[in-house]
Structures are given as structure tokens and as C-alpha cells.
Length: 557
Image (cartoon, rainbow, N blue to C red):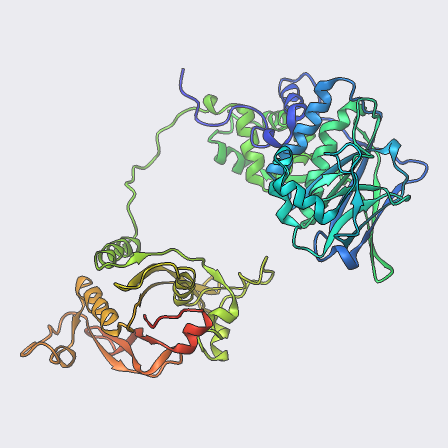
């Protein structure tokens, strides 16, 4: 037979995060032995409540999700092991080693609802952790213990997450018993034991979306031990003594997603006869995307995405699942209608050649972030405020470190120098980068244009202006751009530039990023076009700019 060309098992992408129960259930559904489960939200006589003190928690772990599973049995040791393994896998993957989400599971029978979640002074938190029998620890002392005790080495990587914080997050019940100190350890009082029947699940997080995904996954996997019946919990966020919002978790309602059948066939590589609408719906249901229906008027397949399939984000994910259910090895092989040979675009090919030449000149290539802070791009480079209007600004940046798309490569080079203080500059430190910058362009379809730039820096005991000047002449020479007669006459007697080729020259210019009187711009002339177009600038970096980036040696760029 032919070798496999892709994944052939159902939900293989999510299998590491759904545990034994999730994988076994996915296989049963794939084989037709079981239908996709429908989760039942069971309303208790009195819904449990988790009160989040936003005044203290916002600074460290602001979000929380909860759920209750009743009637679960852990008498089978395999069930308990699987329960712990699932939490460990989630912690290592989607929880990003507990930095985004931390899971706590507790024996509800040992607790007194309702619950509270707050951040308390680290030395005021005192409880018996899960790793101890009877000894109580304060928060900071416990983390010091975990950082050094060999028997607790599995908890050592998590201690730095909150170690330096003045307040540690703590979950307590109505009698002030500590359930857990997330994201580190649960309390011993509420530990899961073989006789545990009712499980209280809490997930604290720095990302609310991830918290819901993780909570839903734990509930979806282990609710099969209690008939897929789940009890919701109200999470009440309180700020300055007033309730700001109430979220009911877990959120198990399936999402609806549509995919054009024509696009599904195109992605998978099947024709109309090979993938009729009924077959597409049946294949989607084998992948737990049930129920699946087809609308002939719009030629679309509509599926219900269950809560544990957080990997389904786009219509192409639906197409991929249908392809997996169809079987990649069952897709007929066809020859492309056209034969093409791939090659770099002219710009990329030239950029690669340019990188080779600059590297031969002794420069080390760097690759820096395309996003940066606005103050780095303008204020630290001493640029005027009016230039900020030309930058592409992110509307909702994840961090202040990534506010705008860079308009110059110089910031990345200077930040690299800032982090390279241990490098010797005895022979001069040479760095370069060939990458794109982005500037706003109202004439472009997307409102912005990518422009390929070259930046090179020389840092040494002296400014090295002549080194950068020499690199400029070398770059122009290998690019077949000759110096014009006036520029070349400074060093070459009797030189006459060819009139049919592009030429360049330099002229002094004042630029706030560079030292006054030690800066020039490069002017390019092309035959038949308006002469002297500015294409670049080089010079000695201004001392104030160097100070802004904590660079102690003179630098030219």
C-alpha cells in the first residue's frame, strides 16, 4: 500500500489534551459505536457561587471558571490516574505550564460553599498543602521549600510564576478553609480520594478564553462518569464592593459553524461524485461535529462544534476533519493541470544575494521582531511626532512591546546591541539585517505597503563612520549602481560614469537620529527619471539615541 500522507486518526490534534477518555470516546464515535454526547446542565436547588475579588486578583490572575460533577467514582485506580494525567497534560500544553491557566479539583463533600477567590499577602496565607500530611506553611515559605526540596522538584518550575508578587491568589470556602493557592498547589483538606463522589472544579487564569477552554475540556472528559450531567457555578466578579458581572460556567453549549461544500471539496481534493452532501455530513459527524446538515440553497454544510473541540476555529478546520474521516490514503492522486517550477521573486532573490555580500564583508546577520513599541520607533530615535502618522498601529496589542509595525530596522539593530553587551568590540561589532518595514499607504488595497530595507551597524572603540561608508560603496558596486562623476572624482581621477546606468551620490544632511555634521543621505539617479532620489541615510548615531538604548560604545549605521 501507499505510505500515509497525513493524520488518519480522529481528533489526533486534540488527543494529547483530552486524555484516555477523550481519545477512546472519539474512536467509538468514529467507528459508529456511539453518538456524540449531549451535555446536560443540571440546575441544583441552590446554585453554588464563586466570588472573585477583582480589586486584588486583577493584578495577578484575574479570571476564574468553575463546575461541579456529582456522582463520579474514583474507586477504580485507572480513573483517578487518568483524572490526574489529564490535568498534567493540560497544564503542560494549553495552560502553558500553568502561566495561563491552573486547574484545581476538590472533594466537594469536605467543603462549605460558597467560595471566594482573592489575592492575600503572601505571609498571611497559611494552609496544609497537598504535599504534606499535617504541616502548615505560609505562602512564601512554601515556595521557598518547593524551590529547594528534592521531593518537590515537580513543583519547582511553577514557583517563579508568583514568587515575587506581594499578594498570592487563594481560594477559600465559606469557613475560610483554603482549597488551593493557584497556580502552585491544592490544599490537603479537599483532596480527591477513592471515596470522593462530588467534584468541585476551579480554573484560575490570566486569559479568560483559555480558562473556559480548559474548564470545558475537564468537564467534557470526566462527565462521562456521571452521565454527562454537569452542575453550573455562578462566578461573581466584585470590584470596590459592587458586582461588575456574573458569569455562569462551564459554557458547554455547542458552537455552530458553516463551510461551503465547494470549498471543502477543494481543500480535501475530491469531486462532486466522490463527496456528495450526505457523505460530507456523515463524515463530519464521525469527527464529533454533530449534528451536521446540508443547505442546498447555499451549498453549505452546517455543523455543531462541541465544547471540547476548541481546535475548530475556521471553516477550513471543518474541511480538514472531513478529509481525515474520508481517509487521506483514499483521496485519488491526480496530476496538476499545469507544471510550474518555483523560484524566488526578483526582490527575494536580490535580497539573498545582498545578504551574502554583506556577510562576506564581516557583518553578522540578525533577525528582529516586526512589531515594536511606539516610543522606541520614534521617541528613542529622536524622530518628530508627525512621523508617527505613517506607522501602522495595532488596535488591540497583546503587550505594550508590540504596539506598531516597525517603520525602520534601526530599532531592532540597536536593541540587539543593547542585549549584546557581553560581546567583544575590540575588533568592532558588525550587525546587519535585510527585512521588510511597513508604512501606511492610502493608495494600497490594504492601506499599507511593505518596503524591503537594509540596516547595518558598526560598534567599536571609535564610531567607524568610514566602515559604514565603505559598506555602502560595496553594496552599490555589487548592485551595479555606479558613483556619479562628481562623487567618484574625490577618489578616482579621470572617472566618467556611464550615462545609461543608474548612479548614486551622497550629500550631507541633518537627521535627529544622527550626530550633527556626521550624517549623509544617499541619492539615486536613473536615466530618464527625475534625478537624485533619496534612498537611504548613514552616519554616526546620536549619543542621546545610544543612551536611550543603553549602548555605551559609539556606533555608526
